[in-house]
Image (cartoon, rainbow, N blue to C red; front, top):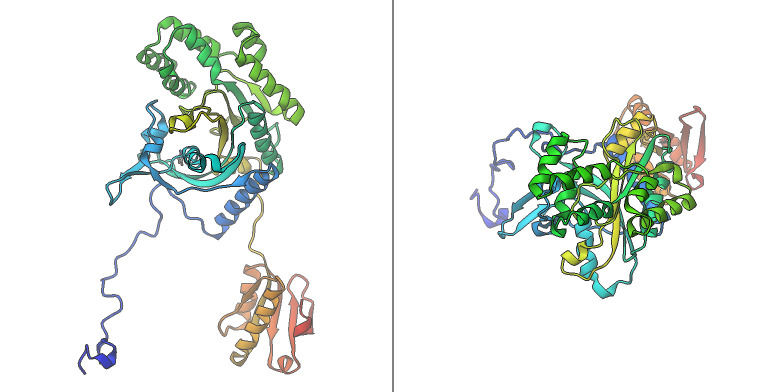
Length: 446
Ligand SMILES: Nc1ccc(Br)nc1
């Protein structure tokens, strides 16, 4: 037979080349370094967590948005020496474009707000849950991806926006059984820093860089902090004064230091007054050393921490009134937070608050005779049409196998399609928790 003759559709005759023409390559079955698979049991926990993110966001009237994981690298290029920049997962694509896997969601959100322009009316209350990336040398063995929940309020200059965002996070914690005894929020304002730098004539354009250095307080030795501040151009006197102000842990002391009239103290006092009204005063404390590690924050900043001090920051956020204008847009006030999917799970484990999330199926349906596989499919479809979940046994299996599977998938009922019952238009039902069994007309099955 001519291997390429037309009647064979161009396929060869007596011998068929192996469908796998490549010699099999043993692939690494693990995901790339620093990334995670989500097998069913892990995916159930992730879905549960995200469901709680969504329910709180919607409780606060926020709308869900999303953006590409891949963005123009330019969206994340800031000159302030941020870790997020140093670890950008960036590359040149086949079109010679500089692109990056997003390290955070806020710049994408700002881009979408500017894209929408006048077609959206302010304020915008948007939330997103998205995978974010960093490229870190695996020497530290840290992950390279995580999922972040963000809530952002665009177009509200008042501190009421920050108070609302913190209220949303408190609501989320309470929903999971976490209390003010477990976690708290350290709150400050970058305007505290700005006030000190202004007194020492530190140029405005160095503000972002100074914040990034200060964010490393408690993470690197103090003399390293001082060295970096000197390299930014600050005098020894300015550095000493700055570090002394940053050690203030009470609003009253800050007021003594900066005076009552300033906007800084006024905004913070308003935030703490609103916290009282929202009912989360016990959750928050002033801490002047909090600046957060993103250059674009301009005002109130906050971070959630575990009171046992065992974990990294749970979440963080603040006001970023200049970000949209740095993207060429109008000066639109904005604030938001990011809440990662990793530290919260460690906290829930610590507090023994992880939910039990087994697979649950209403029915397992099995035919006792290959001739009745169609009948089983019909019963399965009938139940599914009534909103009942069904695991349909798809091949002839011994009953021992069926019972084992029923137990493994935690099915509530076993529905057996037998010859004699089917002739009477009935099926056999077994309630697996009690062992109770009965026969029922198919159209009465519910
Ligand atoms: N920005 C960022 C991205 C990914 C991970 Br993991 N951590 C931080």
